[in-house]
Length: 119
Image 1 (cartoon, helix red, strand yellow):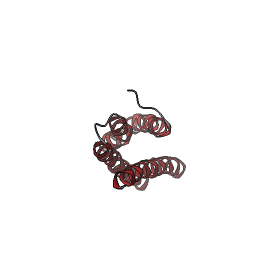
Image 2: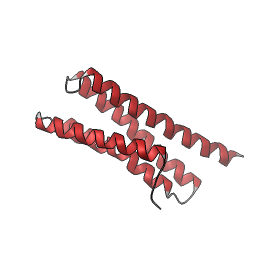
Image 3: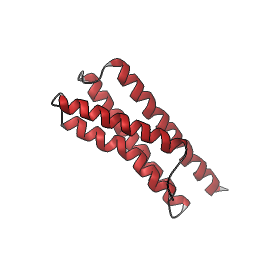
Image 4: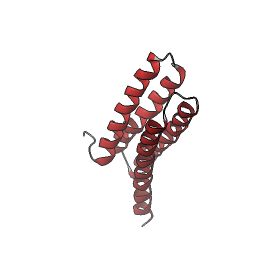
């Protein structure tokens, strides 16, 4: 079953932006942070896709929680890239807003499933 929907679409758009950013960073000779944000930024959607095919509601919550952790890690790398002047204010704001939106959507999704389990 192929994942689809707004979280899938937004995480894919974000991941493509991260890939483009990493290519630019590598052209500037920055390899360590680019590799880290590539891993965390693309893992958000990848783990969400795993959640869509979860074996149980608990498995769904677990996999979405991993996506949330990856989004939080991505925040960190964006902050470091911005503070070290690899990422300008405009792009930083844009990417931070995108990952924050994903974070909130994923968190809401996990909360909804948790609430359903408790009833």
